Image (cartoon, rainbow, N blue to C red; front, top):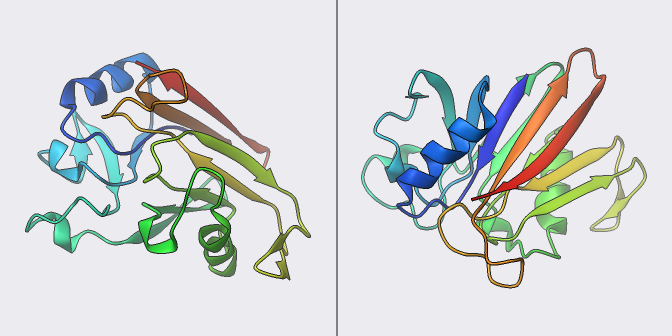
Length: 177
């Protein structure tokens, strides 16, 4: 399956539309918070299934009901979505969030909040908060779709994730607007 992974659109609705157009066809959109108000319907976006979690800037009435984290299962992968603010993530320190995802049985951790793209593969045995991972964990942040990420080229970022059935692998990518 192919997913568009976005975060932190901060009212840049035109950037969401452009990211969808650039990555089509996609099976779903995975939105990691801070701009969930950019979607009129939190179940679908132009007919594409939409999965959202709440970010630290999502505090309007409808957004308060969104979960802080969500675990989805696609092609036998457990994918944890979160904004990351509740785990104090930074572009270089996402250890608390990754340890939490691993404890919940995730194969993939998707987070936003930092506005900087991240793509890491943590092999089995990697120490997180002093505990070794029992299985590998992919960690991915698509970057910021709504504010220019200074220090990483001055672009707006989005991500893609493609899962291959029967645990054949996962491929990530970053795109810019």
